[in-house]
Image 1 (cartoon, rainbow, N blue to C red):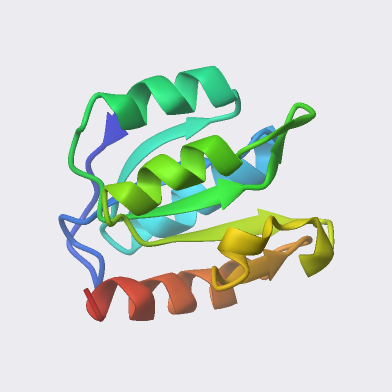
Image 2: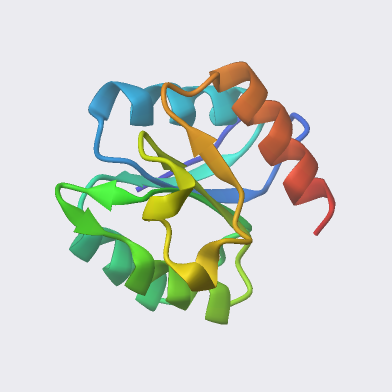
Amino acid sequence: MTTIAAPGPLAGRRVLVIEDEYFLADDIARTLTSLGARIVGPFGDLDEASEIVDRDIAIDAAIVDVNLRREMVFPLARVLRARNVPFVFTTGYDRSSIEAEFQDVELWGKPLDIAAMARQLTGMIKRI
């Protein structure tokens, strides 16, 4: 479930990856691992992801697909927010699909620019 990576700008940081597109999830995980992140997941199912988040394990940041197999992730996003876990949404939809309470959350459109995603996430985590 957790992958330990080599030292890098995200060394020791745990990043939760919630994405139901297998190849995209794999690309995200590999890229972040190459930067030293410890990947929690990836999870492509809302119930699985919720179970992990409910366990109260250490999570430094999360990348969250808005729509997992036709289920919106906003209940999970509320839990992440309550735990003060910074997160970003990924989606092929526009901002109007995001519930009002999450309009402040950064939205990364698909298809993702993986290199840009890695830079932005690194910056976000370093500000913690």
